[in-house]
Length: 372
Ligand code: AMP
Image (cartoon, rainbow, N blue to C red; front, top):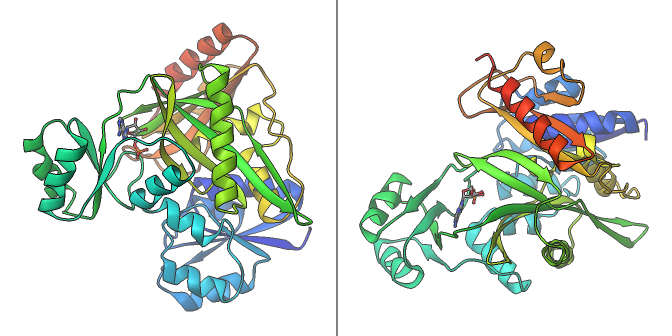
C-alpha cells in the first residue's frame, strides 16, 4: 500500500478528510481542482486545472492507482477523458443518476422507494401542467448543479411559480410537492467487492436539521422507530445493488406520516456522515477508500450510544475556546470564512441523550462566538 496513490476529483473538505483517513493506511493523495485555494492541497499534491482540460486530466490519472471524486458535477466529457486511462469509482451510472433530480426520482421509484409527486419543467406550458398535477405548495429546483439549498425556490401559490422559474434563469427544473415532514434522516452506506464478493454495510441512521438549506446538525441515532430504520437500510441496499455501486453514498429522506420519502442521494462521502470520524469504528472516509481499493470494509458500528455533529458555517471558531470542553472534537477545513461557507464541524459522543444535548448546546455556544 505504501506506493498506492489515490486521485480525487475535487480538492474540497471531503477530499481533505479522505486523505486524513487514508494517510494512516499508507496511501498517498493527488487532487484535481480548478482552484489553487482548494483546501485539500495541505494533505496531498494538487493539480490545478479546468474540468475541460482533458490532457491535464489524463496526465493526472496516469499518476494514480485509483480515482474517485468528492465533487459530483464532473462533466461527462471529463469522465470520458479520465476513463481512457483508469476506471473511476463510484461509476458514471451512479454519477449520472444522481446528478439529474428527475432521473434520480425515477430511479428511486424503480427501486420501490416512495418519492413526493413531481413533474419536469422546461417551458411555461410544462410549468402550468406541473402546477396542475402536483399542486401547491411545492419546491421548484434546478435539475442539476444545486447544493446546500441553492438553485431552489419554494412556490406557495401558482402566481409565484413563474417568478420562481425566472429567478432560476429558466433552467430545466423539477417541480415537486412540498413535504410537511416531521423529520429529515439520512442513511450513509458503503458497498465494495472484495475478491468478487459483495460487501455491504450501513451506518446508524442519522437525523438532520437544516438551516437556510444547509445542514446544521446530525444526531445519531435518528429518533424514529425501528421499522423505519430497517427500511432505510434496505432502501440503501437495493439502491447500491441496482447501481452496482462501489464506495460510500448517502440517501436523504423526509419522514412524513411514518413513511420514508426519498429526497436525494449523494454518490460520495456525505456531510451527514462526518460524525463517523469520531463516533464509528471505521469512518465513512476510510470505508470509501477501502471500497474503491477493493479492501475489506471496516465495521460501521457506532461506538457510543449517542453521537452528534454540528457544522460550522460562515466563520472560523477559536480552537482554544472550543477545545476547553474535553468532549468536543473540532475538525477545521483550512478554509477562510465566507458567508454560508462550511469551514469545519464539531463532533461529540455521549452515553446518554441528556449528555449529548448538553454537548450540542455547548458546541453551538462556542461556534456562534466565531470570528469572521
Ligand atoms: P435539497 O437540496 O433537495 O437537499 O434541499 C435542501 C433542504 O430543503 C432539504 O433538506 C429540506 O430541508 C428542504 N426541502 C427540499 N425539498 C423539499 C420539499 N420538497 N419539501 C420540503 N422541504 C424541502
